[in-house]
Image 1 (cartoon, one colour):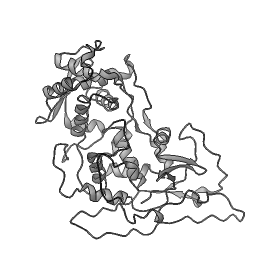
Image 2: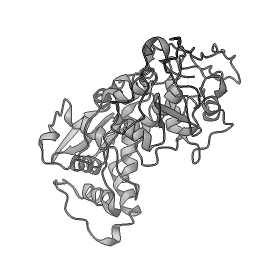
Image 3: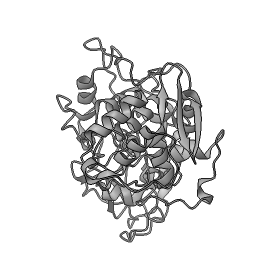
Image 4: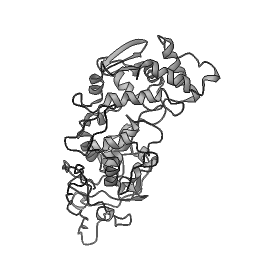
Length: 394
């Protein structure tokens, strides 16, 4: 992924080249190739928009924060979920126009605030809260025990995976589905976040392995940056990750104190964003995930990594299930329980999904204050902690 290859591809594929030279950038570019890349990035009215980072309060209110955190912890990316910063237009374009990763040296050079910088890949990983040693790199061959069709069947009950058509809405487990959405809003940023690529499916596979591969943040991140400099359409959503690189040591540049334009759009994957993406719906008992266009409650289950049983009737509540309210006799309604997980025998030489416990259950949250949209009024619940519990599904 050399600098010459990057700029050459972009210059030849740009549809906006015949429209003339773009206006001068608000920063000084040190060579002609960088200027070509910048012109290509701003052609066709492409916009820099905010990176959506996970909003912990919203995920906690939905009852999935512990599960999503456990999945990221399993690849040692747990600290990545604590990131949440603004996206700035000028530094984003400056980085993308000038970055040049050196695979053999495991370093990246780029320009920021008019100066050339250089960082090792392992430092970039550490800045993001990702592991730095014994990693799976973007350019490595797929592990022999990773079969996208078999894994897709496990998590969706669909017979075969297809990169152009498979969508994350088919994923049964709400924590896996939302973990994928976190990935597509950050390191795999794009506007069509519903489709799931093979690389993204591989990330989910890694998250459900015990002692499995740990993806290298830097190699996947720089591949995405490179793709942005060769695509001739689509807005740019990756700037928040560039802010993290610039604002933390060793660079520690205070971008918020400089007169940069903030990118448009929400910077959090919060309740409002999840609702717009049709991942949740409101009900009398609060926000609820959606599966097959129907809301359901997340009930107690000990194992997030268990994909058996896959029959949804065994672990979801129909949307017309009675909401938790006080009854006349002050008796609490029983909570539907999951069947005990059925451990699979190893089949076809593929690795059996691991089973690892969650840390705790959480009480059903109130509808507010996790987002600003009005929600239906709740009936008074005298002791919700004894009556209705929310945890993770399988």
